[in-house]
Length: 246
Ligand SMILES: NC(=O)c1ccc[n+]([C@@H]2O[C@H](COP(=O)([O-])OP(=O)(O)OC[C@H]3O[C@@H](n4cnc5c(N)ncnc54)[C@H](OP(=O)(O)O)[C@@H]3O)[C@@H](O)[C@H]2O)c1
Image (spheres, protein in one colour):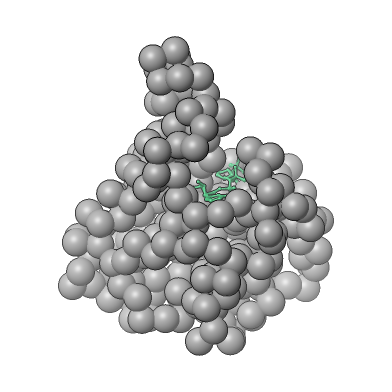
């Protein structure tokens, strides 16, 4: 699957999921802009994913914590691309922490989870969708998790349920907004643990049957696919692999 001459922006590029997405898009020939709040995390990403200086990878430090920062981040991406249009955006920001029971959790923890995992993704959509709406063959992909659909198996994971359920609801609203536009907006709702490169556990210590590089081809499949406005629930790496085959 070739993405030569395609430009992809990955927001949350330094994260577990985002890092594999960056690597796989580079392998497929795309020009990739990786956005993180931290220059040193972007440097670690290039080392971890063995990104060579000859590869078309552009690091951009940016934050989507508020509208002004999001506008700055979008501007930094546009400047780095020197006018090249963007074809695909993956916004994969935020991961919740373990928490106490809901009424014992400081409300700030819920606010932080929603700021990082919901609000930032909305601001990324607000920054990039206007350009993508007009672009043939473009896509915008969000990422949520299966905790959205189930009572947390462990009450300490309830922030994940709230954050992911909200993100899934946001997907449907953004899908309605973009129904008549060229961009295909979808969310991959991942119902299993994904490990960092070469690992076998995710950040919660849950056993993962695969790492980020095993999941990432699903993102390329969605970018090249026909799905539009869908919440795509993946129950296993096998489901991810099915999406990748196009
Ligand atoms: N890992 C899993 O097992 C798993 C399983 C199912 C679903 N998911 C879902 O996948 C998504 C990502 O998870 P992950 O495991 O990749 O988490 P992660 O490793 O913590 O990565 C999240 C990324 O979000 C970025 N971020 C947070 N706030 C930001 C902001 N204000 N501006 C820009 N970037 C920001 C962070 O980037 P910087 O700190 O570099 O800025 C980080 O790279 C979440 O929705 C999660 O629920 C993950």
